[in-house]
Length: 104
Image (tube, rainbow, N blue to C red; front, side, top):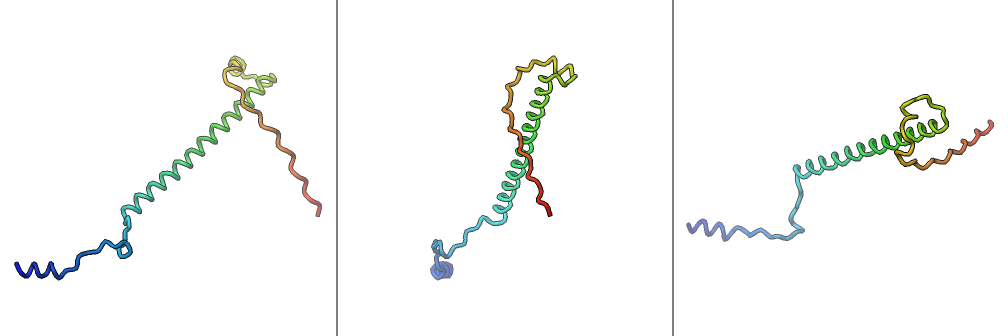
């Protein structure tokens, strides 16, 4: 028993000095962080795809309504649908013509 007390007394107690300690989340922390980042990237790409799809559908609907108003379309389902069911989207300004190429 005395030997055990002698060993315990001879063993230095650990210090809690932050400059001597190395704190790391380890492999499990890296894997968890990687999964979270990968999930966020996947969600961002999916959201961009969905927003683009909604924008294209609105542009196509706007074109169809403009054609129906001009009387160019022969689609009876579009003519039968009320034009005031959806609010009209803002019309985009026309793009300017591209600059001419320089002569060589």
